Amino acid sequence: MNAIAQLKPADIWRDADAAKNFLDQAAAELAAAKQQLDSLLRAEPGAHVLDVGCGTGDDVRALAARVGPAGRVVGLDSSEQLIARGRPAGPDAAPVEFVLGQADALPFDDATFDVVRSERVIQHVPDPAAAVAEMLRVVKPGGQVLVTDPDHGMWAPDLDDRELTRRIMTWWSDHVPNPWVARRLRDFFVRAGARDVAITLQPVVLTSLAAADALTLMSRAATAAEAQGVVPAGQARAWGAEIERRDQEGRFLMFGTFVVVTGVK
Image 1 (tube, rainbow, N blue to C red):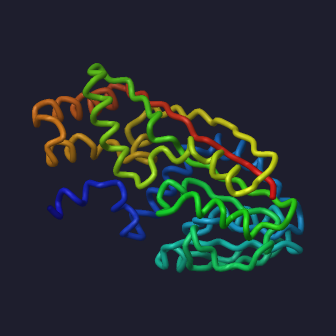
Image 2 (tube, rainbow, N blue to C red):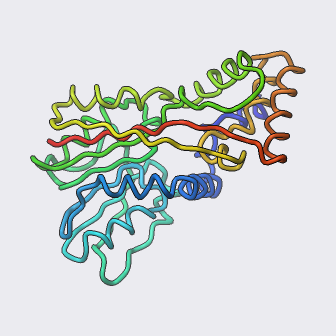
């Protein structure tokens, strides 16, 4: 049972080094999308900003440089190991603070921040609707909340067996606590009272298995599907072998969609 459990995507967060490597690789693959995401964020000089699910704080430090020394940036994460790796920003940046806590029960007073952001986090939160409501609670009137997550029901790999691919990918995505949360974000914002709610779709094109692994751990899916009896062993192995073969031959392709939702309190 332990060997099978180790194949689940959620287990990556149990080890700080593995989690950091996973986050770093994902950030590299999403560099272009990141620029668009940053352009949507209203983090002006002097702003007080909260990054929910900050990991080791790369975005916290980038935001600190953006808002400058008159601002303030707080990074919150549920992993004590990742928080411990947070570092200060540069001399011309805002002071930064790292806080241990849960996205659906933020340890801050009402109307504390000018901007609250969360990237690739809500998919893992036990109560995603509460997390969005909490972000709106702690932002000031007129302040902005931005949340983005992938829709795991929309990953589309180019593979020969369509039915088998649908079956394995649907089962594999269900290991994420909230695989379809991206398509529900707008509803969460509206129900929490946000105004000026807007949606931006960010297409993601992945042309290597390493890139796909950075966002989905796809290379583990065939072995896990065989081990847990989701599909017959021979079919699972053939499916996994095709993925490896396409990657080695430079023919791997998978694309998907990130959903970015912004709203104002």
